Length: 284
Image (cartoon, rainbow, N blue to C red; front, side, top):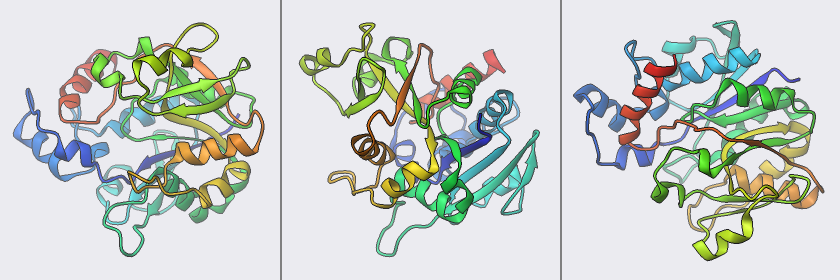
């Protein structure tokens, strides 16, 4: 089992800031949604960030070393999780910060593959170790974290049963489907397939599977694919799924899918804030 967790929290939160719906939100929550990283929006009666609850579940699963990948001037994270660059004690874990610097000539960060690459270059020990990497705006369960820590494959990811996600069908239809072979190895990720195309991508149990961007990775195997990840032609970002697919093409059976059927609360737009508040009231 591995003890390293990397949480990607350096994004620009563009969809949150651009979303319009603010029903059932206070002025303070709307202001936070429009101005801060969505990972820092105060949730629940104590107004703590979603990262708190993510870290709570990670600690329950046994992680010890957490690396928060943050934007260059995102000093608010340090108010919550410690002011030192490395090894801040928090709830039985040690939290370190990696900075996702924005390259010259760009306004926004260069994507999730770039974020993970910068973390591995700032903490070179991770290039030879195993770690789990996930988004900061999805509230993954203790069971999911445990499944990845206990998995014996070099690389693995959680493949969620699409029917278990409690989102609207309009939203679910925007999720990419994963294509698996008969041994549950990742073969492809299909973005926004049509209804006709979707029928081709059921797994061996007849389920549609999606990735919610939580992966167990071997640093030595993924590093070069992060370093040479191509830029997405439309979104103009280096995306982690692209690097992972390139690894899967180069290394047979590189990535194993772990099937799960459960919901993953997330913070994509303002309307998700009140939903997440209710979830935390019920579960924490």
